[in-house]
Image (cartoon, rainbow, N blue to C red; front, side, top):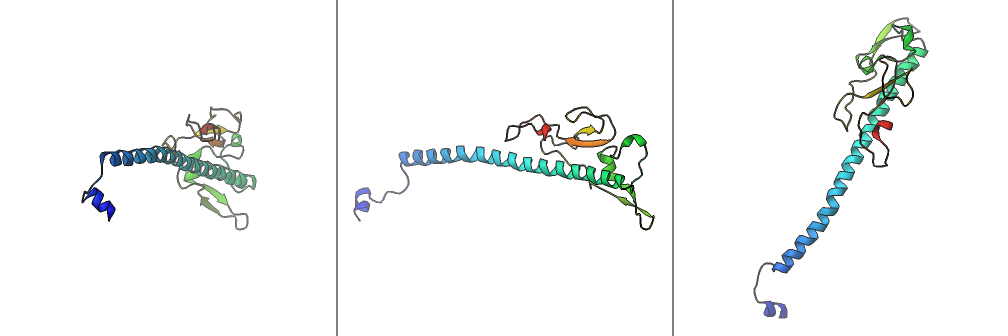
Length: 161
């Protein structure tokens, strides 16, 4: 009752109250925006990890089937690895040792998009290349890596993953 008598029937906020509320909102926004950026980068990093793992597992599956003698390669120089990522998407004929028949196996549905470059182009290493080389010999796809020059949240380069 005293409050009403003291301030009367005023409605609304004073300039000081508005400035204080705006200040609190600015502080909250200055915290929220970097957190959102960090979360977005973390999400894209997880997507990159999954894409790399999926492609590397497809290469390994292809190599295992060659080693089992179930995939006949076109060239002796292939050494058990696919020519490129497109071969994993297009599929290859895999022989069944029991029946002697072949069927087409696709290891990837499509070439994934790098979440940091936005392209389906990946760095490739062939079996003959150095393990940390950046040039691809054009055959024997042994490994893939991101072409992004950005740094990860842990300080490493995406192309080194």
